[in-house]
Image (cartoon, rainbow, N blue to C red):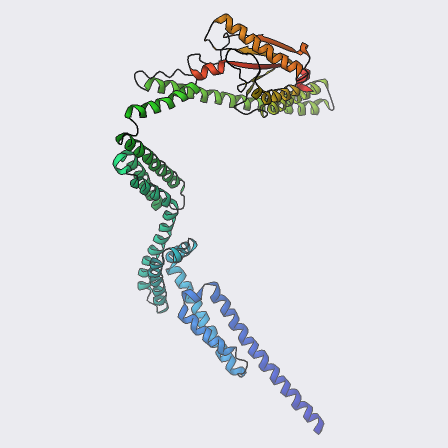
Length: 483
C-alpha cells in the first residue's frame, strides 16, 4: 500500500524529471541551430544569401529568448536552422555561379579598390549584390549575366590600381618633360619615353601578375623622359645664346677625351667619333674577356683545391693516418689559403685613389697611384706620409720579404734626366723606409727605370700620369707565405 508520504515523493520526482526533460530538449534544439549557423558561416552565406540569412538571424534571436517555453524555443530554433540550411545551399550555388566575380572582387579589395576607385567600386558592387538577389530568387540566367559584368568591373579596378602603382612615376616624368618644352626641342627622345610607357601599359594589361617586363619598360620611359629634359635644356641654351653649338660639341668631346684617357687610348677625333668609338668598344671587349679568364682561373683554382682535399681523403682511406704525401698536400693547401689571406689583407688597406695592388708570381706589387712629387723633384711631400704609413703596414704582412722600390717616369723630357730623376725618387723612398719605418737597409733595393717600363700610353695625359709612378715590389718567400 502506498502511503501518503510515498505519493508526495513520487509527485516531486516526476516534476523534476519533466523539468530535466524540457531542459535537455531546449539544449538539443539550440545545438542543432548552432551547427547550422557554423555551416552557413563557412560558405559566406551572410554575403551570398543575405535575405535568407537575415531570416535565420531573426528566428535565432527568438529561439535564444530565455523567457519563452521549451516548445516555443524549439519551434524557433528549427525554423532558424531551416533558414540557415537554405542560406547555405544558396551560398554554395552562388559560389559556383559567381566564381569569377567573387575572385576578382577579392583581388580588388586586396589592392584597396573600394577606397581608390569608389564610384567604380560602387557600380560593380551593385551588380554583384543584384546577382546574389537573383540567385536567391532562382533567376540564374540573369545572375550569370550580371556576374560577367561585375567580374569585368572588379578586374578593371584591380588593373587600374596596379597600373597606377607602376606607371605613375613615368607619367609624371613625361609631364615634366613637356613642361620643359621637350615635346618641341627633343621630340624623338620624348617620343621614345611615351612609346615605352605605352608598351608597359600593354604588358600589364596582358600580364598584370608578372610585372618584371613592365617595370623594365617603365624605367626606360623614365630614363628617356629625363634625357629629353636634359636635351631640351641644352638646345634651348644654344638657341638663347647661353652657349654656342661649338661649345656644346667641345664639351662632349672633352667627356669623350676623359673616357679615352682612362682607357689609355689617344682620343683622335679629327674626322668624327667613329674611330674613337671603335677603339673604346675594342678596349671594353678586351676587358670583358680578361675578366672572364680571371673568373675561370678562380674557378679552376677552387676545383684544384677541392681535388687536393679529395686526394687527402683517398690517401687516408688507402694508407690510414698521416703520411708524407698527405702532409705535403696539407701544406700546399694551407700555403695557398695563406697567400690569399695575406693578399686580401693588403689589398683592403688601400683605396682606388691610393694604390693598385696585384700579384705577379710570388711578388706582391703596390703601385702607389697616390704618391706624387713636385715637378723634377724627388723630395717626399707631407701629404704622401699617410699613404706611406699604409705601405709600412702592408710590408709588415710580409716580414721576410725583400723590398724593391722602382722609380718610373713618362717619356717626356731627356732620357738621361728621366733615368736620374726616377733613381732619386726611388732612393728617397728607400731612405724614408730606413729612417721612419726602421726597416733594415739590406732588405731594400732602390732602382730607377726612367721611361723604359711604361704601363700606359705616353700619348695621353692620363697615361703619362700613370707612368710617373713608384712601384713597391714585395718579393716574398715560400716560408713568408706559409708562416
